[in-house]
Length: 81
Length: 411
Image (cartoon, rainbow over all chains, first blue to last red; front, side, top):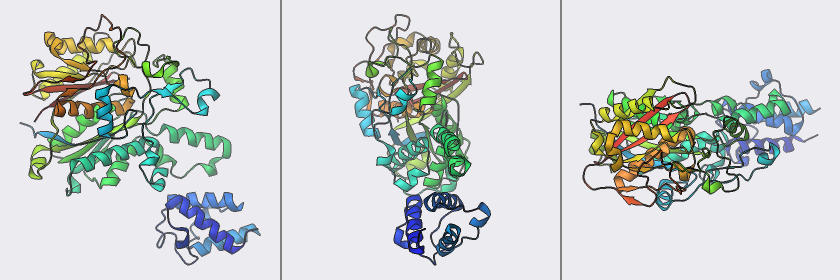
């Protein structure tokens, strides 16, 4: 079970790998699309990589609800439980 | 008279050089880009051919990691070559609505396609990358170049197997002559040194099996030729309406005087033994350029080093140029680069443009015992081309019976 801090750090690493954005720019209140400029194709790659890293399943219909990094951390944390 | 079109920028990434200056210097020296493939899949699949002419400078050394990740290798090569050509053209400002792309490929994103298939079978559909489709599509290189330069007058992808790169120049010329664009980035890219295409080309007996001597394997016109050597890379040329180039004071390498594309309608892979389709392409291209056979001083031949392919091209050259063929310096640069399939015409166009501009014909290596049935004057040591007004041709032919010819002249 990863803590919320560990999930955030893991997501930051995945986002960096996919987009080149600095890991420290991946903060809880940042919007994936508006702040981090992540397109839908990159978002799906990030989702699938997060599934593998955290051992969870993020259904496709859930992805549209993950507007901010915090939304993703909360979802992943809940899905682990 | 149609609009005159000139060439103002050159780019390339090839087995004998990761940029144009390196490639050109090597092409005059005569080096082989063919090597044994250092990949575990050669032994794993027990491939009958264990060598190829791989790119001299990996794209990962030139492109940023994140941008490369979203491109098939064929698109990576296209972007590397087109950026060099664009820088070389010196264009600073251009109306992007008048800037087009004609970037060819023979096969497209075959690495991406087959990697995704492996992923599907090994890990399931969830792990197939969302970028798979845009990476595998054959228009990927043209689209990436268009995005990179902001070219909005259309992004085209001629696909005619090994004639594709030359057909891109044909298309570019038409775009400018018809008034649809003022500047076109033309080129071809290929990245098919993957076990499946090697197995497939080997199955049709098209590849050289000289596994113990890769650098001697590509030997156009030699009696000992036994097939072509797979190459990879890209070539790119910025072509421009002459008045556009003159208005910005551009350095002009050569004029793209004319082009032609014909089809054999003879056999899906075998060339017409009488070279009729190729002859028609040569004659039509010369006519298109308002050039005479006697003007031609140099030909960059298609000459892939297959037993059946090299001779019909000679037959066609003789039919189109008549007795003047004896006065023409012929270079078979695939002896050095291997066969870059859909990129070959673009890379050879770059070499032919430089041959005109520098008045030097690149060399043909491995010609130890010339096939007496192909008595061409083959350039085996660096040779100067004559002064005065000169014309050079570059030929490409592709599976499917595609014949494409470009005519270049000095300015």
